[in-house]
Length: 96
View 1: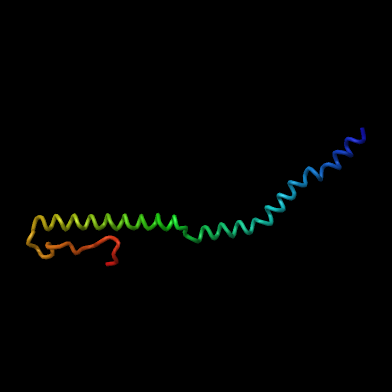
View 2: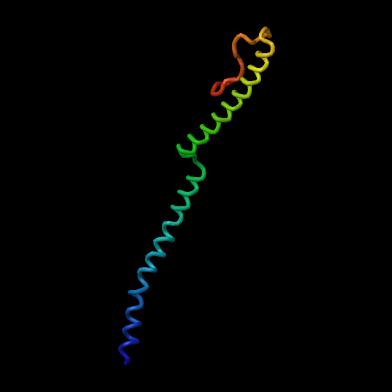
């Protein structure tokens, strides 16, 4: 009967050792993981850059479309007006 408590007490460090080692590993690697997360938050990935560029170009193209529509309506009503020979307004993707 006395052997059971002694055996249980002797095996306790072996059973808890994995938990302690994993905790020590997590504590040791936490600063590295946190640093990596900060870098992810502060930098823009290529995918994000592409998505942002696409959004910017769609907005510019929409603005160009609205301006061209306005130009076409004006020139349709008054074809002899100044500037109706060729569209020279805003063009998406060009720095104006």
